[in-house]
Image (cartoon, rainbow, N blue to C red):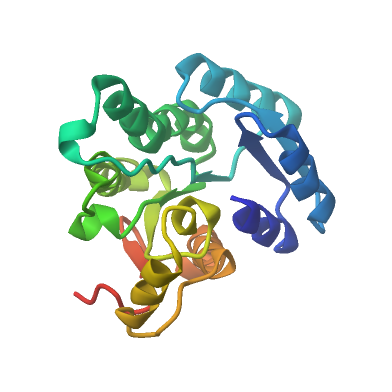
Length: 229
């Protein structure tokens, strides 16, 4: 999220990003940005919070040109250990939240006959992931949602695409592995290293820009060759 915000700001976008709890981290992102960036507290898994967030942004700026859905949680739990509450929380944050935000911004985009939506999915949604079945299910659903929504709104000149990162060096991933496991990840990735958040952000920026004007319903797999179709 930080890398995407900074990349969009550097490209000249006025960026509003939301955070759930860590206000200090959010302010640090604002301070690091080169352009106009503001932060708003909102839990995108909460429908009312999303509707209020989008309404506030439209009130302030009058339009929303780009939506990036990047929220995610990634608990490591075997299927037999996943409780109902955890299952619901993972799907709500990783899938339902994107539905909420898309539904909220689309009326303005359709009225403007212009807009771009980029959903950040995961390689887990393409090939599965042991001990992360709920996360993989949500991300697989997000990819299907991306293709379906893309077909639905392209007639309004709204493009919808996705980015599916592989193993990226973030706390979300590396916090679940020891040094030996991280070394194995690098060894079985053809490029022989983990990706960086900035490499994912560059892909998001590409999909958000006119450079990708003929891409509709596509998924950019940013995974260092880990998954080759």
